[in-house]
Image (tube, rainbow, N blue to C red; front, side, top):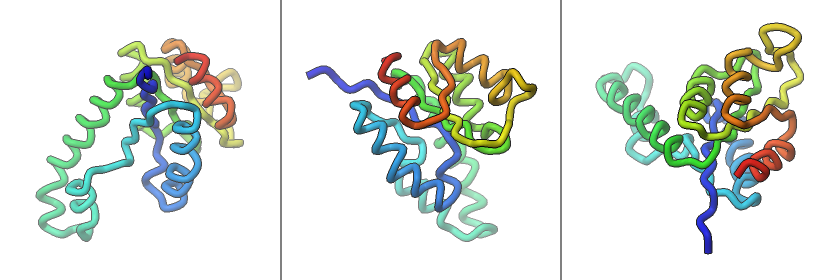
Length: 161
């Protein structure tokens, strides 16, 4: 049996309870149901989660965060290098800066990026851009595309991978 293509799931959904709920119950299951192996930056290892669970201002948290931040960045970069493609969530008044960085890195590594923007608000730099024009350019330059529904995003991944 051939290995399932790995898809890095980029986006800011892990920062909020409602975002995590959508990420864990809708988005990641849709990636799995399509036959992909999701590489999930929000699936943090226990020791990293333990640092974030410490109260803000706690000395242990303050001391450990620089190392945790480097570990998270390195882990996400490793997953992007390992993936076959990227599904990037582009909702919000502007594309999340971490997601934008991941899109650029994936494009530089020639990993196709499918951008999902289901947000009804306008976020482009001008009326010809759906999102930040540089983000849009990297998505398209990667061989990927922008979509407006999860169904279309999954179909885009299936067509590309």
